[in-house]
Image: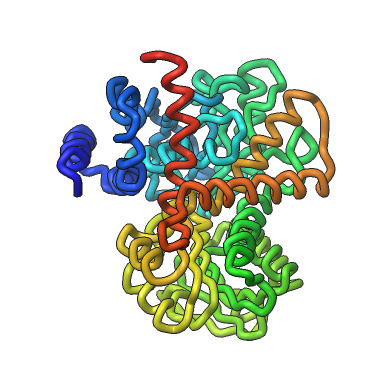
Length: 445
C-alpha cells in the first residue's frame, strides 16, 4: 500500500475505532480511487477525501414503545446523513437486531457513490434501528414505527432527507412511518419512497433492486457476447431483492436454483419460477424469517444452517446482507465453474472474496449492481414532485437505461490495459467524480 494511502487509512481507523464494516467500505473505495485522486492537486489541497469519509450529520435517539402485553420496550434509532453534495440525503431505513452505527455509516458511505452512479440528484444517507420485526404483531410494528418517526420527523423532508425501505422495512412499515410523518407535519409530501401505490408510490419499486441487478448482469454478459439464457443462478435471501431478481432472471431465460434465510437454503433443481416466486412473497410477509416451508411445499431440498454458495452454478448473486459470501465461499463457487459474481446486497462479499472473484472470474460490487432500487426511488421522487404517475412500462424502460448507463460508466473508468473490466475500480471512480466536483464547486462546507 502506498505510504500516503496507508497514512490516510491509519487516520480514518484512529477516528473510527472498532467500526469494521465502515472501515472495510472506506478502504475499498480509497484503494480504487487513490491514483486517480493523486492526479488532482486541487482535490488534495481541499482535503476532499478527508471530508468525504466523514458524515455531515449523525442522529442517534432512543425509541420507547409499548408491546401487546403493555410492557415498555426501548430500542435505539439512527439516521446517518452522509453527503448532500448532489442532492437531498437518500437511503433506506433498516430494522434488524444487527443494526449499529458502524454498519449504517458503511451503508451511507456506499449510498453516496451508488446514488451518484445513477446520475439522479440524490445524496447519500442511511438509517434504522436495532428493533427486530420478526415475531411482532402488526400493532406492535405500527406502534414502533410511530415512536421511531416521532423523533426522526424533525430531521427529514422532501428537500432534505428522503428515506426508503431496507431489511425489515417493507411497504407496511413505510406506510406506518409515512402516516405518522404526515400527522406530525400536517403536510402530504414525497418524504418517503417505496410508498404504496395508493398514496404516491411508483410502479416497479418493490422489484427494482432485483430487476436492476439482473439488467446489470445482462450488460456484463453482453460485453462478453453472452446472455442469460440457459444460465443457472444462485441467489441468497428471499425478500424483495431476491424476489425481483428471480422474477426478471426467469423472464430472461435463466434458471434460479437457490434462495436462503437465516435457517439455511433451498436448492430447487427444477428452477424457482411461477407460483414458487409468488410464494417468496408469502414467506416475506410471514415475519418468520425462514425458508424451510418452501421445501415442504414444493418438494425441494433444504440445507439447514448452510449457505447456497456450495452449489455448482454459472452466476452467484448475494441478495441478503453484508459480508454474506466469504473467501471460502468464493473459492468453492469458482472451483465448481461459477463465472460471475454480482452483489445485489450492499457489500455482500467480504473484501477477500471480492478480491479473489475479481482476479479469477468477473465480479461487480453492490454500489453498481443494486443501484436499481434507489434509481426507481429517485424516479418516485420526481413523480411526487411533479404530481404525475408514469406507467410500469415507462419506469421499467427508464430503469433499464439507468442500469445500462451505470454499466457504461463502470466500463469506462474500470477498463484495464489487458481489456478486462475492473468493476470495483470503475464503480468507485465513476461514483466519486460527480460527488467530488460538486463538493469542490460548493466550497468548504
